[in-house]
Image (cartoon, rainbow, N blue to C red; front, side, top):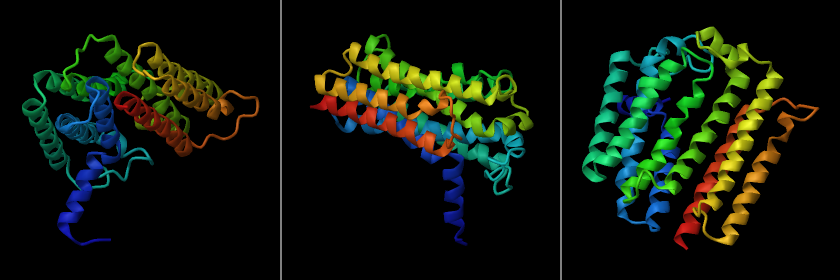
Length: 291
C-alpha cells in the first residue's frame, strides 16, 4: 500500500472513471472509425481519446448520482465515495474535468457532429438511464443506447453519415450486447439491487426465467453479429464464416442457461466470454476492412 498522495489520488481518479470500462468503450469508437475509413491513420486518435474521457466522466458522475445506493450494496460499498475516500464534491470536480477535456478533444479535434454524438452518450447515460434505473426494472433496454453511440462517434469522425445503414447496423450490434451484460449481473447481484432501492427483474421473474431471458438476449447478440455480413460490413467470405462460427460458439457456450440441468452460473466467467466475443468481433471487422 503506497503513502504517495499523488499515486493515491490517481488511483481514485481511475476508480471513479472506471478505466477498465472506458477503454473498451474507446475501442468501439476506434472500430467505428476503421470500418468507415478503411484505414488506420492519426485521425482515429482524437475521437477515441475524446470518447474515453467522456466515458470516464460519465462513470464518475454516475457514482456521484448513485453514491447513496452504492453504500447499500456489498458489490459497490467500497467505491471511492461510499468508502469515504473522496467527497461527492471532489468526485463531481473530477467528473467535470473528464467531461470538459473529452468535449474539447472531440469538438476541436473531431468536429461538431462527433461532439454531438459524444455528448448524447453522456446525456443519455447520466440524464436518462441513471434515473430510469430507479423507475423500472427494464431500464437497461433503453439504457443500452449508450453502447450504440460510441461506434457512431468513430464513424462520423471518419467522415461517415449517421443515416448510413451500415453505421446503424454496427450501432445495433453494440446496443443488443449491453442487455445480457446487465442481466447476467442481476443473476448474481439482483437482490442487492432490490435492497439498495432499485427495481430489479429478480422481483418479477424466477432465477430460471431470468437465465432463459438472458439466453434469448445472448442469442440476439449472436444474430445481430451475423447480420453484419448481410449489410456488407463484413466483406470477405472467410471473415463471414469466422463471424458465424464465433456467433454460434457464443450461443453454445451459454446453452447451460436453458438446459434441463442448469449449472450454477459463474458471472465473472460469463462476462469474460461475452467480452472476448466482442473483442474478437471488433478485431475481425477491422482486419477484414483493412486487408
